[in-house]
Length: 225
Length: 192
Image 1 (cartoon, rainbow over the protein chains, first blue to last red):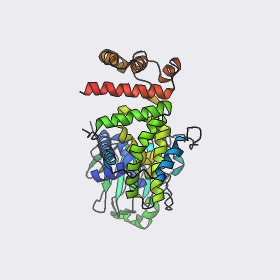
Image 2 (cartoon, chains in turn cyan, purple):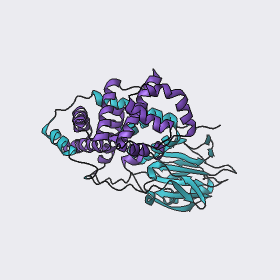
Image 3 (cartoon, chains in turn blue, purple):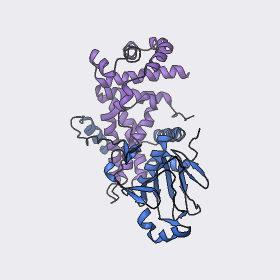
Image 4 (tube, rainbow over the protein chains, first blue to last red):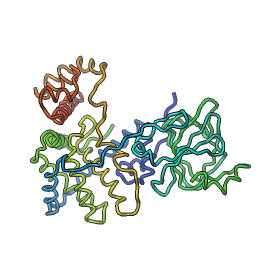
């Protein structure tokens, strides 16, 4: 029985619960929480702590502003407030005849997920429209495939959504939240009978380190941005 | 385990206000809730928004949601104050990018879907029903009759909340809030 071993750090969860993490990172954390009961409980505990702080906050005076706000709100009803219609949720992402569950945070926004395109190796990639300065992609690795060895010029976060992949340091299962930076050199690959879908967040292009693949470097901006 | 909000009894009071707002748009309850929450929220918002008008907007958006959507608070999932905090956090998340040319299509409610109703919340599996009927019959007897009746119908007889609302001629929101209060009470007894 394999289980999730890689989690966001406590500080990330704190910022997430406070609503202060940037939108792209927030999507990554929210998707991790869908898989990870442990982090869900931690976030709930942080929210409780923040709610207690709200309770302990000194109240501002009931000013005219607040008084008129109170009166205005009580005149509203479900009939007077026009809400944007609930978007239809798309619960899956498909690739050929395969279907995978889509992280909930993206379900209302399928139009922001680009078409699949091929990358070197048996890798396919679908871009997610920019939500911050960093780049978000779905990466699909078919059975028995590998990405050339590379390092990262910035930080890369990989969240496994389905299947398993392996690198020099170990193997990763759905829900694993893997942070890599310039220190880490790795060669992600899948096993013969196992494919893998990940959501990745990258703040700089990959840098390929081995043999022929290093020829890709001038183009890595094109592939992995 | 998770830490409790410091004053659990006070939190019950807030839960009750939310239930009254949900079931009968009770203005007196909302007035009390507003005076309790809005001035604190405003001081918190002022720490996060330099612009006073944005701070007021955060309070107004949050307080309006509490007025319109109090019925979505689910006591079985946590404290009332924690829910209120979460509503305000979602509002803040969206406001932080407003007017900053940082267009973002991801909304707070995508990340923390606290204001959407779960579709399966009206049903409970037959296995659970049996557990409930065996172990909790006694607890149900100790509830106020108006709550006990609804708990029996939904959990022992398997009627949907919608059906109960039609049979008893009560608004669906009232059925839901009575059910929540009842379950919360029962849970407290069990936790003791």
